[in-house]
Image 1 (cartoon, one colour):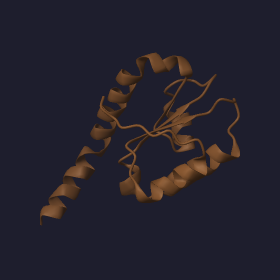
Image 2 (cartoon, rainbow, N blue to C red):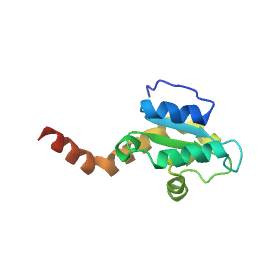
Image 3 (cartoon, rainbow, N blue to C red):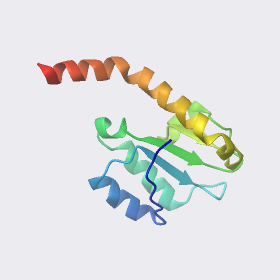
Image 4 (tube, rainbow, N blue to C red):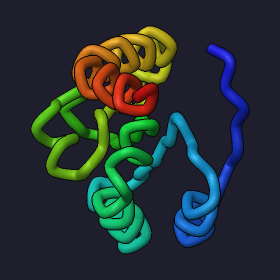
Length: 119
């Protein structure tokens, strides 16, 4: 995997950066069992991003005591998936599986969009 990384401490700064940049992979590390106001504000923000922009990003929430890769919990948060800190050992495979899954989900949509752009 060949990603450029940026560490952003403050979620308000992340929201500002997302207004002008597309990040293909976003990790939110929640260290406490309960979500903080900052993470809630960010999750609210990504739920209202333009769909075309949101589709380009994979949002991963890292949470202790979470049921890893639970799609219902991830969906309720607006994230693509949730992992535990212990899952970081298999991160490359998990991310690749998610990219493959997302491509399958949006293949028809993206093909139609590409055809419309050509016409």
